[in-house]
Length: 75
Image (cartoon, rainbow, N blue to C red):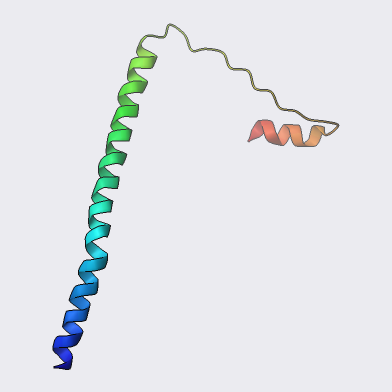
């Protein structure tokens, strides 16, 4: 009697916890795969049309502290 009750509880709670995890996990994996493949295809389209890469300007505000500027640039 006790073994059947414990088995029933484990089955109920196991299904109650595992089924949502499996469903949400599969959905999350599919979405991550889609994002990854979409970004790779987008990156190919963008870089294929470029003759040269654009220049980028970085502004780092520093006030009287040259020691931290070197560290910031290396990072």
